Image (cartoon, rainbow, N blue to C red):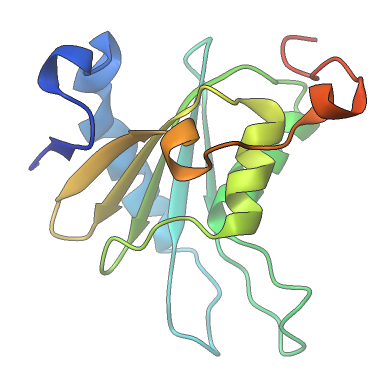
Length: 151
């Protein structure tokens, strides 16, 4: 797969060799997307610190607002299984679309230093730090709370 990054090669995380496999998981998760209204299928694969992978896909609803994105589906699955430590998330769309603002904020809640891999079906991808996608973010510590990570 092709690799490009907004960071330099020397800053590339040592786990970058896992990105191809994680992207493949996201592509597979995309196949389960329920997107009859937009026809814009999204798959996500969340890699936890202990090596588990939680997959998610977007699930639309005729009323639109009850819809949920692939990234949030994957994170919520991990949370419901008691896993709160995340290393990276791969997000795949047909054209390499980036996560929406709501998903970025949910990622920030649980993993402010998350690696975010954004890919397309042709195998092209870019690697970001969440802080690049959501600069000057707002989190639990802004409200005087300890983040949920690592419980």
